[in-house]
Image (cartoon, rainbow, N blue to C red; front, side, top):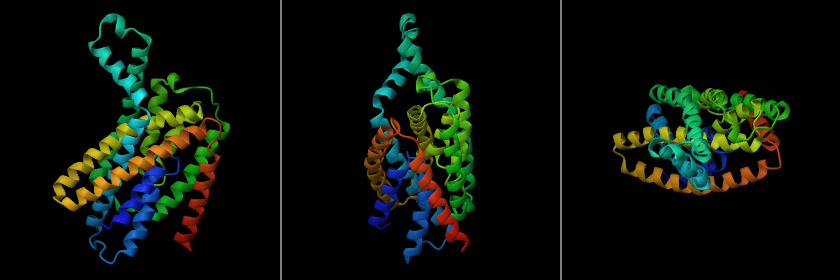
Length: 285
């Protein structure tokens, strides 16, 4: 794949993965444009789908490391809580910070189970219609309205430390909808968390924590696909894309978290609504 197309995919992923505007939807639109530009685009639809999917997941893996780096202190607390709960003495297991870390790990895993199961099934099925611009247009528009409703009318009094297993499960079930491109994994999980009364910053933080499991699972499947393809160049392309998206993703996280401390989701809602309307006009007219 040409290097500047890889750069395009990686920057799009890095800048949109953690914003509630759907990175997968933007990537699909980019793939449609690039494949229309390339004279040597794969004529086999299934082969093209597989190559695009591997590059997409590679840039997702890059953003995974940006989350781990940005929230390394939180993940250290979580890992410490899990380890000490399993191997520490009774006094350590009962301490407040260990309990919080252990509970956070439990909520992240619980909320991730639905999308891991559904994602594995979708990976085997690989329906082409899910990657159509028409689907992206409608989901971009519909879930923009859902985010606006949750952000406008729900209370915002709970921080991420007030997460419960019921709330985590609801957010996790909502995350399954993100398998439909244009929905936005971060967008739908933030919408669900806001609807449950969590603050904007808490909703964003829990959504970012969930991305670690979701992206890790997808990255594992993509890595197996690369090995099976026996395509060394595809592996190099995927590694380059991951590195670029890592840098872009880190910057995007920092900007979004800073913004949500004092502002709402309105700019993201307006952007999604405008993009959805433009896409619908292009598709139907």
